[in-house]
Length: 197
Image (cartoon, rainbow, N blue to C red):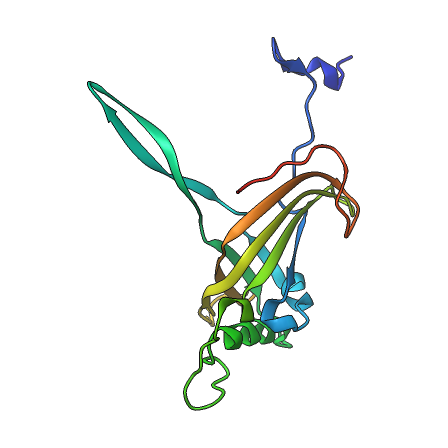
């Protein structure tokens, strides 16, 4: 009778590991909308794109050959899809955040004022990969976030689906920790890694 240890790759190892599953995650926020309760955003989140890191390349020319080295790094924009619930709870959080960045959506005052500095409106996004229960197996801390664009989408009499808000979030830096976590604590088991500088 076959067992899981019979499956593997010759010369590499036997057995297989359980993959991380795309639907076992949560997203939470710190200082989103200036401290407004951001739970509706967490509850109504449908998709979140995990951070993407890329490096500029520097070409070095030497005699009759060339080589490349890594230059400065760039964190690409992060996208989120938020369901627009009938109570407007998620929309209220997004509106409050946009108001912190610049007084546009709520149209407070005459001059559409902008924030004096980034620290007045930037927030932190936490993306936790879960094991199917409460154990966090990977944690991204995405720092210096602000909403670059908010697309409230189209409505359509011919379809029967939820209305969503598509967000593009710009950020300054991201950190990745890999391993077992207890909720609200640091590394408990497994290894830890860090992405970024």
